[in-house]
Amino acid sequence: MEHLLDYCLTELQTDAINAYTKHGSYTKAATALGIKADTLKKRIRRIKVIAAKAGMAPEAGLTHVTAAGFATKRVSTLYKEDGSIGVQWHIQEQDKVQQIETLVRALDEYVWKPAPIIPHSGLKDADLLTLYTLTDYHLGMYAYAPESGDAWDHDIASKLAVAAIQKMIQGSPDSELGILNIQGDFLHWDGLDAVTPASKHVLDASTRFGHLVDLSLDFIMGAVELLLNKHSRVRVIICEGNHDLVSSLWIRKAIAKIFANNERIEVDQTEFPFYAYLHGKIMIGFHHGHKVKNRSLPALFASEPRYRHMWGSAEYTYIHTGHYHHTEQDMAEGGGAIVERHPTLSSRDAYSTRGGYTSWRAAHAITYHNETGECLRVTVTPNVRL
Image (tube, rainbow, N blue to C red; front, side, top):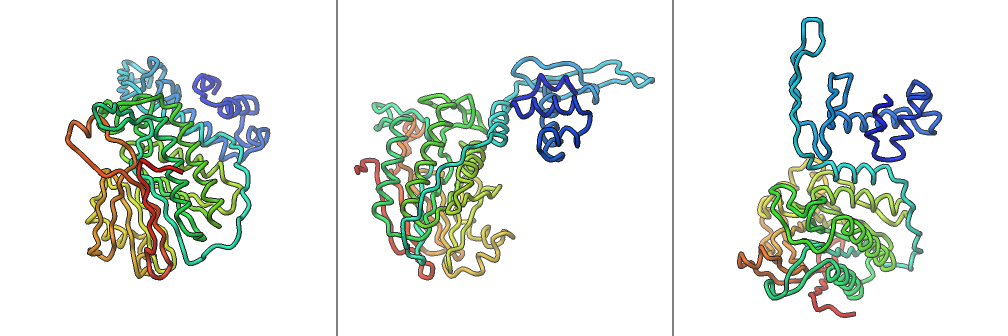
């Protein structure tokens, strides 16, 4: 077990191995650490997975450590008649997800210092819900103004996001519930290398990923606090996007832990890329738009087991998407829902510019009455001023 110390990524993991080595059993080690035995087993199991990817799992016949930055792709073993290893082929490949897995594990095990409780600001209109949407924000993207028409970098994006949320809050009514909807692709890329997660296309980046982690949490925490000063309750939805498949997950978990002590905040913890909320007779659905086309979303939400009751209870259904950076709305209510694609506040990057793509830059705060649906809309554009 001591060989696993070389593969521990956090102090909690190191303590787990040392405790088990000292006490010889999960129960005794867990008692010494003040945790449950199942928690200790889960923690040690994670370390074993890390070690196995690095080629070190003696109990399974793996004793050849991979090179730094590589992981075990495939192992083929030829055993002798006595059961010992005769020949072993150990195929290695570059570990493309190790850094992201490390970040997620660290966030999951980190003991967060909860955010301070913001006091309730008085009576609000219980019939109303206000939805604040930012989609395809691409925090960390770099756009060169002479090429794209408008400059864009992490500094511009951070300042504009705060100004936009503040302006939308100012123009919206005192709804009891405010929903912060980060509609996917909030971050421009998803790891240490500035490339798209699936296709590995090289992206124009204005900073490093570690800086994006700080900026993204700073903004969302600040936005939540602004909404708490406006509304009685706040719900946070962090949609999965095609640029931030993993980051949407760790941001969601981090925000839930940061605001864990505040009963007025709820973070949607849905683990698949379709989200929904029922407000009286109004159902509101969310999807980034990278998996299912807009025209197919009403049927998906109506048939999805976890949302069937919600769909059946609603008289009006609104579904929100992003992904294509432009406005699109099916006002014909095809399939029993109004499906709206939101525009983005961000500038075009080089790829969009050279491809001839254009879009109207904006963000919306939409207020819904619990019986009659949309009743007010506030729109902000990149020239927003407070």
